[in-house]
Amino acid sequence: MNILDKIIAPFAPSHALGRVKARAQLNILAQHEAAKPSHLRKTKRSTGSGDAVARHGTSLREQARWLDENYDLASGILDEKVKGIIGAKGILIEPAPKNNKGEILEDFAKELSQLFQEWSRSVTTCGMPRTDAERIVCLSWLRDGDMLGQLVQGRVNAFRFATSVPLAIELLEADYLPAESTTDAKRNIVGGVERNSWGSPTAFHIYKEHPGNTLGHWQMQTKRVPAENILHLKLARRSRQARGISLLAPVIQRLGDLRDYEHAEQVAAKVAAAMTAYIKKGNPDNYIAPNQNSEDSEERSFDISPLMVFDNLEPGEDVGTIDSNRPSALLTPYRDAMLRAACAGTASSYSTVSRTYMGSYSSQRQELIDVTSTNAVFQDQFINSWTTPIYEALIRVSLASGLLRAPSDLDMRSLFDAEYLGPVMPWIDPKKESESWKQNVRNGHATDSEATRARGRNPADVRAKRLKEVEKNREDGLVTDTDPYYDKMEKATTDAEK
Image (cartoon, rainbow, N blue to C red):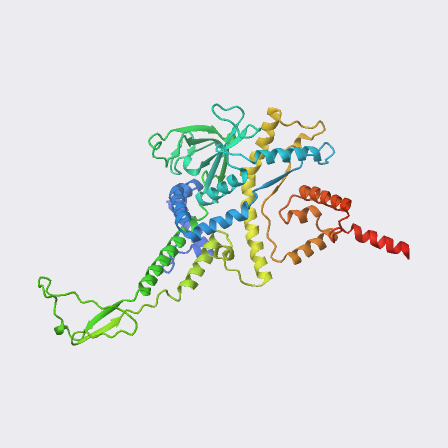
């Protein structure tokens, strides 16, 4: 407090305190120039909690779906993300249960792997294979911001499981949850998500029918499902955010404007492609309006043909053509710039979305590294929120139903241990990549299993197939340069002869 504040304090304490607070606020503004008000820059702020920010998620979701259905670039961005996160084979799992000594139980791990592969043939309540289901789940998650799945396990009335494992997933789009703006403060429900006082979900209130179905739209009845039976994927940027936001949210306006601009240029190009001519009068006084009621009046027409000559023009008339410079020469650079910005806002690869592959090996590899690293973040969230709970439920249901028996020496703490494998970074130059992995393995900086996983393969499967192939070749006397055994035998024979 300065001298004036000390004088005012005995007579008006609140006024003196307000002066001190205002002075402190001015000091903060002096330190952070971005917080200073300015007539040259309009300051925009985002206030409210994470739930308040996601209140308009329904509008964003509907706009993102429209772009996915009607705009090729938006669809390409989403498909590129799904390909990088899920890939062609989905998320593969290598079980790694251990005994009390910390050693992997190979036979039990193989049994778990076979069980998972068998169940993968039909994992949803509508009979969809695992790989197809994961791609649809990932696409809905990125485009809509939310995706849910209900675990259907054990004996269920009027439902027959497609595999021997009594487990299936009911896929539920974000629409099955009430609108993000729907709240019930007394029960702590926001957008269909019921939470406890700590912010942890305890239950989900889900529509019995899809709100988009015209037949069931009038019902709009919900059911309460415990959180342990629901898988919830959400794109959230705030803590305690109950619902997610579409990946396209930051670039929806940019993509919409770009689509409108491209459409305008296409229309202009069509007009320019159709030659348009007009007749110019030399003097307005020479123009005589045609008499529509006269029987002698005829509509003038000109047949356009190569090397034609206009010989029926009236005095003072001249023929001109409308010249158009469409499509604009700035269309391609503008479109590329906007697409680059949209890819940056969605952490996508511009080269892949635009199908423009330029640059050196180093630049292309750097782009792959950046995009693969970003996809790994999404992939980790997908595995944690979707794949891992499903795998653990599969093991629990299999043990409870008697389809699986745990070994006596199994360390129960490692029952759910597994290695999750997603798409890996593709090799631009296989020769350089393979030489690099070979050198790393020889130097002890990597293992054979890591090198195999770098190609997106299962080390155990590759090792088993390779062993069987080599044994068969040796039995048949087939010599290949991929088997160093014969090189060693030839060298040993030469040394013995010497």
